[in-house]
Amino acid sequence: MEAELLRHFNQLPLEFQKKVLEFARVLNATTPKGKPGRDLLKYAGSIDQNSLKAMEDAIKYDCERVAFIENLKTTNWQD
Image (cartoon, rainbow, N blue to C red):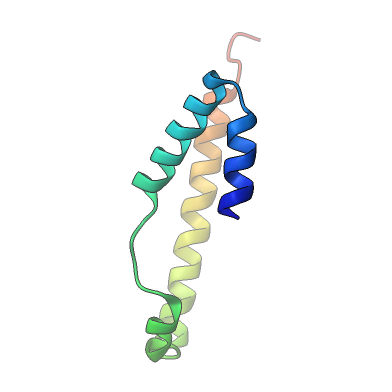
């Protein structure tokens, strides 16, 4: 993969190479560091069904609120 990436990168104009480099830096800086999923398997099944349902409902409710707010922002109020 690295060789293919370098081959494509080296064919780009300098302006695009700079953009690719900046993009790679941003990705590297924002990639969250965490635990591999296999390390979390010991917790599988440890949350009761009522708690899972409460979390699901809260996520659904908050996602709908975000969607509503985003729609308000994009509405043209002058029509």
